[in-house]
Length: 148
Ligand code: DQA
Image (cartoon, rainbow, N blue to C red; front, side):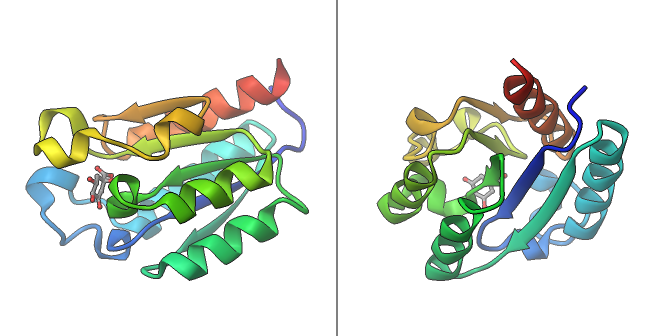
């Protein structure tokens, strides 16, 4: 597939707790395991991934802004900020990079407030409800988009 596409993978607030956080909703895989699997998939597909997790909106905005200088695309699970953050959306738009949004859970099958995403309208696509596998699907889709 792609040769040397570079992708920033962003994990939003509380995703550092994966493995123990509401396992009935988010599963038992840790963030480290998810990142490890994604690194292996990226290698197989000839791409490079860099990871960033933060519980702080401003830190996420800073890292996203920096990505404009080196990344070819952004894969993001904005977590709770999905439903609240205009600033995160604005930062993603400012990069002018293709964005893929991913969620472990099916946000449409949960509470009403999770059904609205500030990010989805500016993403090239959204993958949700497939647990950790969603990250690989999202990366695959982003790389295909970069190749097209
Ligand atoms: C989440 C869904 C969000 O609604 C929630 O706030 C999260 C995780 C998911 O991956 O399913 O923190 O983004």
